[in-house]
Amino acid sequence: MASDIEIAQKATLQPIQHIATKLGIATDDLIPYGKYKAKLPLTYIDEEKVKNCKLILVSAITPTPAGEGKTTTSVGLNEGLNKIGLKSTVVLREPSLGPVFGMKGGATGGGYAQVVPMEDINLHFTGDFAAVEKAHNLLSALIENQIQAKDPLVHIDPTSVVWKRVMDMNDRALRKIIVALGGKSNGYPRETGFDITVASEVMAILCLSKNLMDLKERLGNIYIGKAMDGKSVFAKDIKANGAMAALLKDAIQPNLVQTLEGNPAIIHGGPFANIAQGTNTLIATKTAMSLSDYVVTEAGFAFDLGGEKFLDIKCRMGGIQPRLVVLVATIRALKSHGGVAKDELKHENVEAMKKGFDNLEKHLENVASFGLKALVAINRFPTDSQAEIDALLTLCKEKNIAVSLSEVWAKGGEGAIDLATQAKAMIDASEMKPLQHVYELDWPIKQKIEAISQKIYGAAMVEFQPKALSDIKRIEKLGYGNLAVCMAKTQYSFSDDAKKINRPTGFTLTIREIELAAGAGFIIPMAGEIMRMPGLPNNPAAESIDVDEFGNISGLF
Image (cartoon, rainbow, N blue to C red; front, side, top):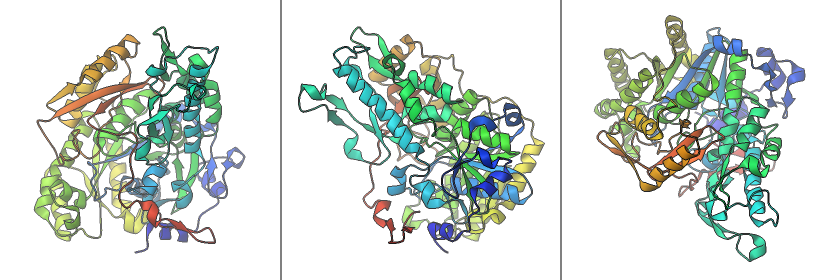
């Protein structure tokens, strides 16, 4: 079979005006970025239509090196819903250049379930990430200027500054750096560092803002550090949020593209789920929900990370909720959780798959704890044996788990007919009830963190290191104890140890520190050794990416 990029490059794309027409969007309202991409105004959001739309959240079991395929399944399910005569739009995150040039590759789906133009979306797209990066680093520059100024608006204590810089690339050498060397005129020397752009609070704010004015207000609430008199300093105190919002005035508009089968796709925002909320913008989701009867969206990594944050943060802030959760699993991943090494996954091993089923069951329990129904999508790989497929389908049916064999990678929408049909039937048969959140916002910070750790992850207890306890006191003293919780934790395990696969029990989750993201509206407990600036692998994907004399790109995946 052809590679993902070969399939995408052979596709005949429709002009973006034709795609917009399918959603009832006037051509005059489009802001084209070439022939096949456009930005949309925020005026199409209709809260009444949002209430009536049937939102489907696609999540997954705990990720493994074998791959799960949430984006592929999301795109394929959207194709399938359209194939059975429903008006559906898929809403996804924008890819980060870190994974594109690193280990994971792009984020436009795979096989015959992709969004296109694949190269544009995976690389610079419409410049949204660049705008987030510039807005973030503008605040860094303004902080340095306040420290250096003879007559500053606020006398910032340089030793208290918590705001780092960001770059959309995996570069481990920038995690910890010393700035302002070379003399007094260059500023106050101190240790700081870089995070990857998707970990920026500016990205989180963009993805949770209701409109441009809400964005500007949230940017002003970014916590910087302390003044020399001990008072807290926020971005608005140094008049940074207006200029930052100006840099983001275009980036806040969602991006319209298309699937391989010519169905609408909206792609906007891109926070990671292991260090941020892991879902596309609220604006993009609500725009799609205003224009379609069904909307398929995804949350990053597994349900314990992206899924929980989607429901406890995004849904709570945006007043939305899904009607169904589609939980993606692969036989390869289940075997991996069952203890099979990556290079042995191509070999049949029914018993290992059954052992790894514990991981799937825990995620299904978590879905049910929110009061939601789940449909398991088995994302089929060519190496899956019929015996393994039959055993997994039988196991699901014995446990009364709704399940569908998805073949969207090989067949596109045709491979999702059963998945789409079952999804519709489950939504039609279920009554929409209020979400049962893991915690209440007015609970003490420790109690909220313990609720997520014990209910969702299965931890026996939570250990708060001295820095974390100090952070809790500081955050509560500032009056932010009622914010949501956005856990930063390894994506490879329910625990904070990536080596504890499948469904670990009896473990202690360690919280080493807690960051305040007042503008975004949440706090970020750092569990274990999670990093906000990844590094490149030994053989990064960048080594295989190339371009020829005609501008044709190869090697993307």
